[in-house]
Image 1: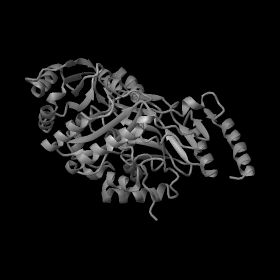
Image 2 (image 1 turned 45 degrees about the horizontal axis):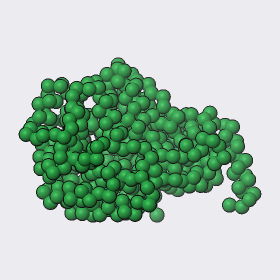
Image 3 (image 1 turned 30 degrees about the vertical axis):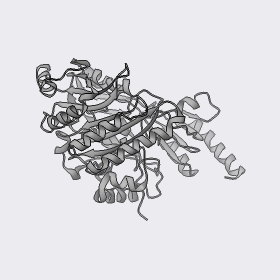
Image 4 (image 1 turned 90 degrees about the horizontal axis):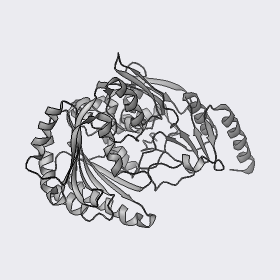
Length: 457
């Protein structure tokens, strides 16, 4: 860009700074460095500007500015995306994190939430009325990225994915217009938003269906790593016919005292008696090294994972899907986990089924609803000198588990975003349909910092 063009853009940025209700930050502003930091400590990008939006009108102004000056645009909600798409080098970062207004209607059991809210914010508002919807398993996760990718959480077997509970969304398009997407309005866009990620616009607010959820039976229970193979097989068999009320994860991880263990995270959305009976069927005869199970408020279960996933560590993840866990697959999981380079790293069976599998495959852009588990490898470490070793370990386990995979991956659990990988996430048929939506709503690929669905040639 020539010096005269740079001066013109700088002048226009001052106009944007004056127009928005929020704040426009540049590298010289005191809040800049804090604003560009996200959950994954590997991401160290430096945007030319950060638009900290106060509402949908600010988002429209920021989109117009970036489009007019051909700047790459990134969008940040909760900042949890492992790929780091929330921050753009040399572009405009549109920061929604200040947009947290949530309105709950207990009569209709619905809630309208702005896109900067986290699941902690959302649950705090809805739990005042004894209500909830499927949210992420960590309170600091943003509602936007989770919903647009599909949305896994402890309540999904009972109430469906987060996107299955989405009723409508307000969307700012690449052209700077605001559209409503719902079953009645722009239904094609509504279909694409439910699983297709941030490819079609910036959602500024979401309307969700809510369900009665207050106290749950749940928590954490851990067993010696020597029991891991047996517990994986027992767990896999059990969840194949478990009641919908059981939301659960199996984790090969490291406890706070440094002990490697096989860990069950439990959230039973039903009575305490039913929950105890269900879980005891799974764990009967096993002696735990740690047990923190009991009746508790739903948000308490949502806080457990935060202790295993601290902000600021360096993260590299890969994922796939498993329709069941064969004995050789369990062996691979355990053997390679025991060789993990650092203690923060863990391996997860993120269990689907129940209501997730009963939604028609063609109803949303989400694929692989028929899998029993989403298999997730979470590489986490502190020192950048350890990047190569840890990334290599994650990739090695991913390759070793691939022969047992049913294909595809969940876009929120993947650090790699090559075009051929993105096609695998959706399958040929759905990818073609999503690409047609991209042609319609974003033919210039303005929104490309994401698990990108490129327009057709």
